[in-house]
Length: 257
Length: 309
Ligand SMILES: Nc1ncnc2c1ncn2[C@@H]1O[C@H](COP(=O)(O)OP(=O)(O)O)[C@@H](O)[C@H]1O
Ligand SMILES: [Mg+2]
Image 1 (tube, helix red, strand yellow):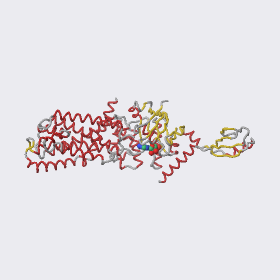
Image 2 (tube, each protein chain N blue to C red):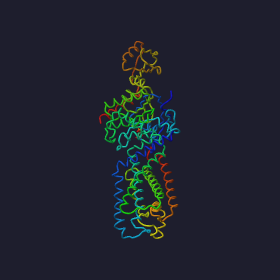
Image 3 (cartoon, rainbow over the protein chains, first blue to last red):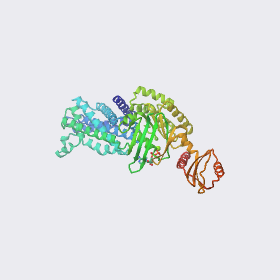
Image 4 (cartoon, each protein chain N blue to C red):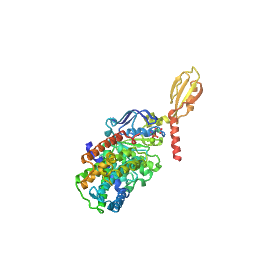
């Protein structure tokens, strides 16, 4: 009985969350499409044609998976961070807190919403990429699994960020100072193997390297890291971040006085 | 009769050390229309917040229809509908979406939720606005939207935290009518207010809270009777015979002190007349200070100030 109730509650949160980013599509879906088109034009077509091959592929083909992953990461993260923070700020998070909604349903609902936006933007970007290069698919399951795990990871991250955030500024600090640098240094634009040995070692500490490489493997069949390691890293992140998110929501940090 | 709400020894100390509730006991019968009356800052919203799990309690026990919020939180929650003091819906969402989603959080199927949303939006005169974003509504409409939202899962207790603050007189009356109708249908209603008039118009039972303490918990009739009455303390000449005063409630405190309750409809002259007929000399007289009365002076005072703003 209560599991039927939980499913309806979960569907309601998912419905609300997807409806939110669809309603404000000009802010949520259009900007990543424009940004990524610019990357394709500048790095892919203009500069890329002078770079030659990277990892045995055209530079354009090489960076497409990384750019898709970059949009998935940013959009999953910022969807949950802004939606949950705004629910706190407008206090409509209380609608869920007074209702018999278990905490895992709240977490799952918001993460589901973030994944939905991340994956939808990923699809849009993929379609745009098709205008610039031929998309080939080496292993669709690796692609699906990577995109699902990555969007879940960053949705959880966005949720944790929103729990701690006290102002709208606080939800742009992590994306600006942590996510963007990690993504740029995460092997989107280059193969890690080009780096000096020391920096290759440092890059191994960057979780985004694993995501980008697993994703690229799904398209091109090449990777700087082993897939097993990549999925283990993703799994470990999800388990840890989920535990933190559950702890924070259960404790009511930033939610209950 | 089973209790709709049973609170014992409830305490709350906020972070920073301020003690907002100093150990309150409160119980509300099923089907009651109950007022929690108190001035601003008395601890009304804190109490409501704890019952609805928006505020963590520091100590004490809260049971909703017998379900303890510590051990049966979800069952307790599903019995309650809350209309909070501050607007707390997504201002950018449409009315229908707000209502249907809220029903979903309580496990109400979408089709049923849409039917109920229609019913309550119509009853509360919001049907024309159903597709508007909530921010487009007037203050009174927003308040009614929150009432509709609180009813979507058909709760057995409706808790309203200052539902008529900032609502004009006419709307206030129609809201009262609506609440009375709900109560007739068997829903237990608890409302907080700082207007005595509102409690008087609506409620059968009342608790008065001040600085985190329940100072009075009684039925409305006895409270009004008390308010209607003044107590005088008379100093009698030592050694006077025990006085008999017909038609008045009086108490002999010691051999030279007498207390007499005088209703507004009675004349204090009658007391003196009877005393002088019994040859009892009154040396002096004073009003017994009445905590309740004082409280009401402060309540009415703060209410009026708010009205003038
Ligand atoms: N989150 C909070 N942190 C600290 N003090 C609070 C908090 N919320 C309320 N208080 C204090 O607790 C007291 C009771 O507040 P409240 O329950 O809102 O009163 P009421 O609803 O009766 O006006 C007030 O003095 C208020 O300032
Ligand atoms: Mg209050």
